Length: 480
Ligand code: GLY
Ligand code: MN
Image (cartoon, rainbow, N blue to C red; front, side, top):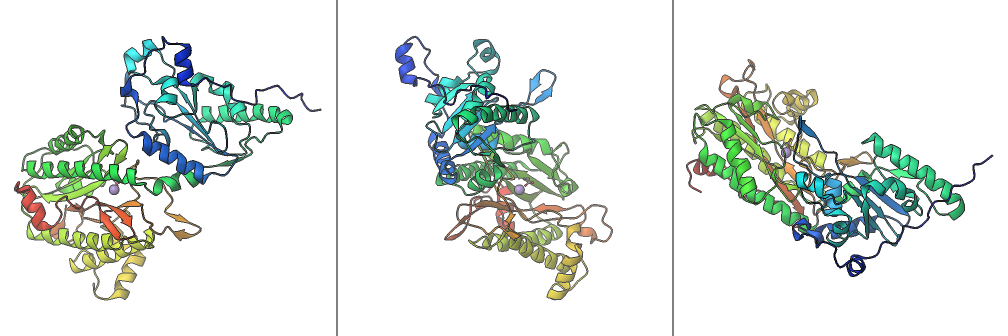
């Protein structure tokens, strides 16, 4: 025997508009304008793009990233989940976003309530009223109300874009809400979510294709990043510590209005450059060596990702120049190939072939660089991975390794206008590699730029940062 359906509200309780509430309650405190999003139009445009991509009866439920304790009572500075940031610009923790195509209120937020006592400790909160008036939510509520309201809000949503297994408590809350909503639906006849899709299918595909406003932010992040790399080149000298360059770089990011580094700044002097994600940055730079710096500024959530490698004394030795030029030639060739229709896989193949030929030419690998069959055989055997062990690049945006599929339907993704990706070939020779020519041992060289794909060809957003041998040496001399 079926259980009698429980009565559940099938409509969202109507909230009066802010104006109405302010008229009703003229004593309501004014919202602090500092709580407003920096780029409301960008997020409104993103929501419109999402609603356009969804079909009637589809919804999306997203949650903020959790906060993380650094140690004891200290928290890491909070960084919003990029999906939530992309859709709303909301920067505070503990929120949920519900998007419903075709609903009277398509954009609903649940956020931290105003709380004078907590705000003394952790800062001003926009609260639900701020979510509506400053962030454009059609309706907003205290996060505490989510479990009670979600069943009603899910009525009419047949397909829900939601990522399971990120957070068990959110999964439980959703499944409970759907059970309740189903019972109510027996009376209302409205749809409830029976089909679930990972948000990456639609949302991440949208994030992969940048709008003009997003490209503008990436350009500004690139410009700040350029100034930081230049300042670090000028400050480099034997005896300077890696962390001093890190401080100059991260300091420039903040001084120019960025949020800081979009990922931990890498300053690898000498053979530390052969450790790909070296972030301890605690050694002095040695004369006669190179330093490899991988650092990108995050501006309003959008990050650059740039690597430059330069000589600690400001002048490349012959061996350093040879290896550097080989990586640079490959990088320039790969950037030129970033045209509409080229696949991500093809870019990696091109880069791999070019670097493998260089490795043969430089004596790192045994083989004839001019014999394509020989190069093919080396690549087939994976010989080049000893010195080039990472990918050629990745999507770039709100996340340094940005979202978006690299392949689909068994095919590598083709580049399209509005995509932004890094091109970052490198050669890394272990200091203990007895098979490598001695003069290259302990060198790590990576060169990385941020490339916007356009109908007119690749646009290098980080082209202004010195890269040729002459330009790098001039920058180290302070000539730029
Ligand atoms: N910038 C770090 C990386 O691309 O892995
Ligand atoms: Mn990168």
